[in-house]
Image (tube, rainbow, N blue to C red; front, top):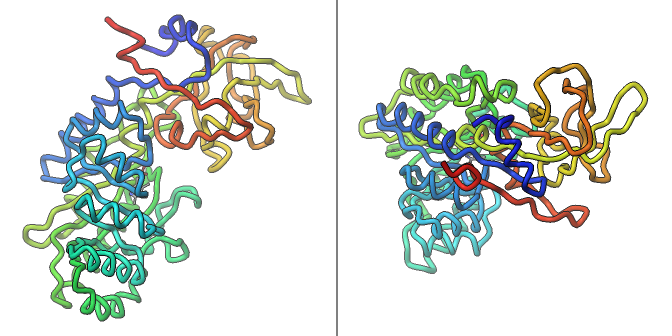
Length: 388
Ligand SMILES: *Cc1c(COP(=O)(O)O)cnc(C)c1O
């Protein structure tokens, strides 16, 4: 069902709300499984993109694992029924409580980001008389060619262990009796659409593998992270990312050792396109050289444009699709950055029209805040709104 046709149903609900198309989510997961299983690749879903119960249960039921970046995400994954041997825990700043919780739940892997973190996890594991399995998150110094705020794999970023620290790390590792290194982990950034960045990552991984072979450390898993981008400009004609090319590329360029498993941690590419933020025009206001369409949704419901200058397609789904007017589409929050788009082409737009902000399933609802004491945004799902 297109959003234009759904508008009649949406009209019965109080706005703003997130609307999730669960059929599209399932189709997306099916594509991922189709192309990842042919190489025996394992995919973990990055919960931070969207941690909605309903979405998580669909992803879990499809057999994907969970990639967590906080103790509460680990807890959520456990509560949603993800198997502990399919839960990994990454993040530059894991607290002692978070580490203890993860140890108690026997998660499969801590992705460690510093020598000091290894020392702390080792000590906490000693206290519990447990072995902690870890992967080293290495900063590969590969440019993801994406927005600087979502670039994570350059030496100037806070993430990962820089390669020049590896000798010192392995020296220390000898003393960490309750840690076992089981793999390497990388994550170079998000919304990556230029696949050559992933090719550069593969080359870096191949080179690093030689270092570990030389040091006689076997690495059963190579975790290449997530970051595959989606098409924010064409959510209808390009609603599912090209998972075939993505997995094929790793198959082509990664040089694996015998029995090595490859893990992926996709977030955005799984959930972005299935979500839309639906809001209503409160006011039309004439500014200097522009008209403002003031919505009842703002940066409190969708912060990406304010935070990363990100683009979301904006559509007036109450009117026929003729694009004769231009509007600056803004929210109600008392910040000038609370703007979803400037000079957006729309039909003649009036108070009460429904506006869809497209491709908001990832890093949308999950980043909602209560700034200005706003109500918590609600979510509706296609299987509830359209029972047929
Ligand atoms: C955010 C994150 C991901 C997921 O990134 P996407 O761009 O949403 O695919 C994967 N791994 C780690 C460690 C992350 O921090």
